[in-house]
Image 1 (cartoon, rainbow, N blue to C red):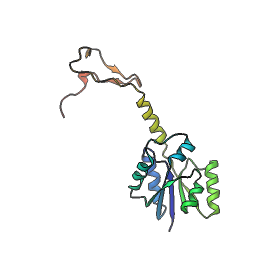
Image 2: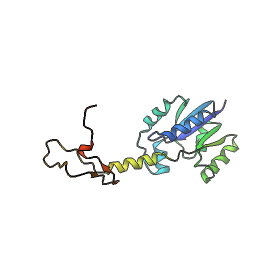
Image 3: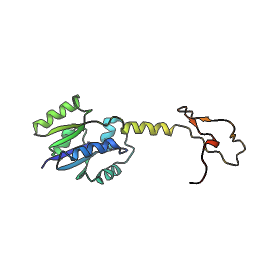
Image 4: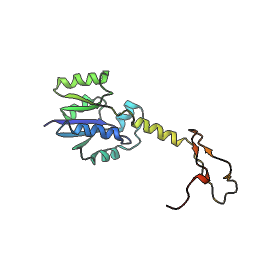
Length: 179
């Protein structure tokens, strides 16, 4: 029986997270997913996850591809091997040919385990989602005008988004009929 291991923060769970878990499932008989603890995330990435650890673990636990969910309290994934004794760890190919990836491969080779790499989902990441959410949080939002608001001028022409320059529909371009 091949015991596989995937470790990740799984903050703001997205398609990249799902991809690595589903790919890993195809290459092992028993899949353990380690959800990295807040302390390790803060130490390694110098930021706190948006989603609390227990909620991240609950999300992962409810995926059919996952056999077991554990807290990963290790920055060094060889330390994770010492705790969970997996046969193969699955990593995104952004780790391949890096000092960290090369060290992990060498350490695991000594104990008969290995690293298997899958394509990293480059178009989506928790870091990107965090950046988008942060930008949204700092974008001023104008309240919708009251129908009774005498200061609203529906003859002013098309409005423009201050952030991106997109033209916003004017009052007469918006369909206000009930659905």
